[in-house]
Length: 97
Length: 268
Image 1 (tube, rainbow over the protein chains, first blue to last red):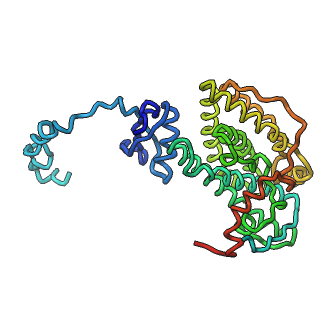
Image 2: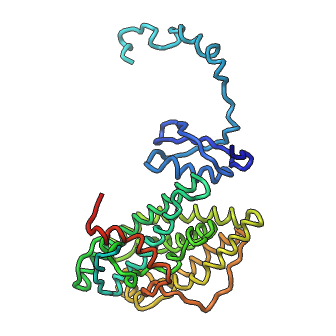
Image 3: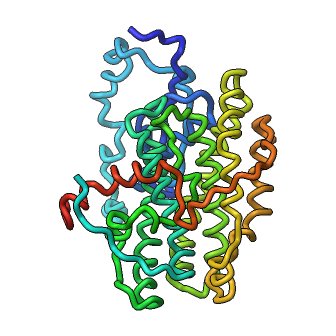
């Protein structure tokens, strides 16, 4: 096992594919600080014209839900079809919306 | 086994002017490519390969152009980029000596790499800036495209030089040593001669010496941020741009050219 104390911090990389679209998570990399993370994100994740804008964030700054809580958090939504707009019957005049 | 014969190049000032920039990019790219699979971290490994490929792309355009003006200006053959890269003799290469010095192999430090990237990318950037207004439309077009790449190369290299120069005692000492090794080869980058004079007279581009003030200003800014001091000037003058190279270029070319010379026209 390598000594993780000598490793550079991990950063998560988000790429905006084009103007108007959201930044999407595309992967991670190691870098010593934010400037280097941005620089290397450009090198590693935008070589093939993948994006027009980059976000980087320290991985340890992300607060994540516990996968073990998946059933409790997300399954109850599965039978709430009325939360989808398609559940409601609209008048014919606006139904094509 | 190197068997294929070398092509014959008629040296004309404007052809040489284009080859000096194109060959410097090609040879620099070949040196940078030695890092592929060997850089200190995976991400920078990809970055150095990206930079090398940018330089190869620029060199391809410049060599293609040199081949075409070789025919129109000297009445010689219209060589393509591959013939000029892979079948030209060492003494017909016109790159500056700094680009051919060993980098990773031969004990070169990573500090030498980031420093050479800074010195040369700043030089390239200034060339492309000025060549955008060349009377030679093809050259102006190449310059316009290459300028964006060069600006990024300079920024990437400057970040590393500052990071290491203004880093730990160890990294600062290594950056200082790399600077001392590279500095004697800098004057060649800005020595104007008959080739430059011909380019200026015909509106093709600036003299090498015209780039010097701006280059010095930009490099001084980075060195100051990096807590580094430019070494004193020396009397040494390298001569790669005249085709008189260090002992290192022949080995580099042998490796770069062996395949095309052994299997002429081979493609894959």
